[in-house]
Length: 336
Ligand SMILES: [Zn+2]
Image (cartoon, rainbow, N blue to C red; front, side, top):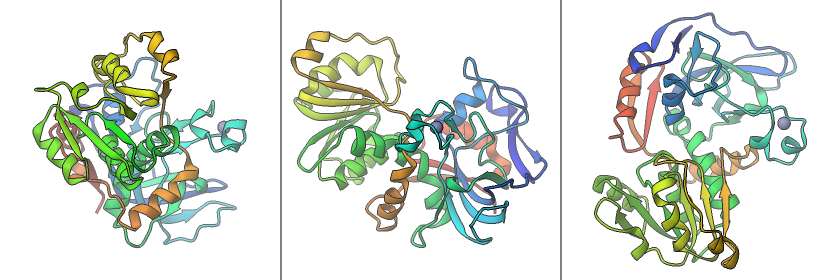
């Protein structure tokens, strides 16, 4: 099968596209013929090498994808030809966390393309529990672009921050995949959204997605318009942290899924207890919520913003494009 893979870690040039053995589905597994895969920053970090990361080379990157079931293993109930979208998290399915729908806390939790081979290949074998019916209303492109960012954003906005109608929500880094998803989810839940970015074009995109108030952090201080917010959705971390804490109203919730500007932040604990703040961490989200996300996407309540589609042969170019940070939304890989 044709696949995009790495044999070492480093710059985009190390990405190779070539033939690898086509995998066979085992018991309870299905093989999906990938139609489109989507890139995430996770792919860039793995390609560059995360400390402590142990990859088995050749390693196929990619968490997101959608395709067609092409072969089923023993005991799997899917029919060949079923159009599916992939939930990118693998877990044991048996531990207390998995049994209560908190599988991203499973001790054996893995993300496709990180600890195991991913979607940047013509064929991918995975447990049947990881495939979901692709709604007819979604193209393969739209479906492939959704999973990782919408699952992450849904967990932060709807599950952890429990955003409800009329609340004020501050969402940083408006141009990122997770933030473009978070803006749409918060608007769907009836919130007022304040979006920040240091790029004017990304703020325009945030406005198109429904953001009510825009703050260019390169030229103004977000705290002036973000007083007493109910929730903050953040992956910027460090440089915003102390100001974030000041912006939260008493009893408010900050959900963090990253620290792109630095992780060594200082917290004045008096704010934490006197104002009863909730500071929550978040990584990925539950498979349990994925059907709801797909349903809302199929009803056009929200959509993944697609920036550009590259053929598999140009995988290095696609990585360079994402790394340059000029994209608006998802970068996709086509297998057609
Ligand atoms: Zn588990």
